[in-house]
Amino acid sequence: MIRAASITLLAALALLPACGPVPVRASRAWHGSTPISATYQFGRLTADLPPGTAVEPAVITARSLLVRQGHAIESSDATPQEGKVVALAPPSLGYDKLTLRAAYQGQGTVLRIDVKPQNESRARSFLEALLAALRL
Image 1 (cartoon, rainbow, N blue to C red):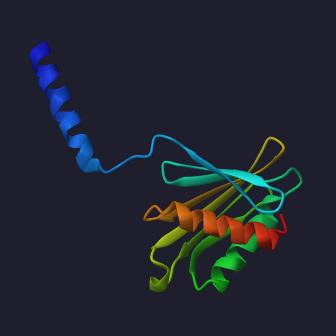
Image 2 (image 1 turned 135 degrees about the horizontal axis):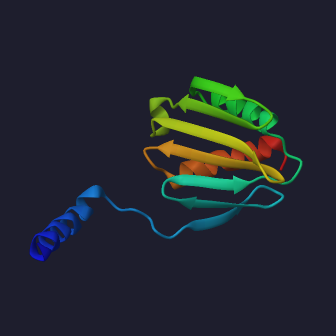
């Protein structure tokens, strides 16, 4: 019984490299003129916007920026508590989809940006453009 469990565990460990690299450590960088700390981990960029930044204007600005960059908006919605924009990228940008989620948590708005396939530099670049458009 223990031997069978050991063999199963070893087989599972042998398959892990086939799953691809998973970044365990988070990378942090400062963005915008405020500055705002953004953390990238497990394929998602997360940033806390300054207190007083509302969800709806952030989502509306993100949608507008994505359209100007040539994205096709797949879906978009925003309320005072949360919002989401899913945008399909043109082939020239080198990725397929960007999803932005914004939610009011505690004292401010938290942004989460996912780029598929995962691309940290593209997520950070979009955050920079969004913060500039929001004048943050």
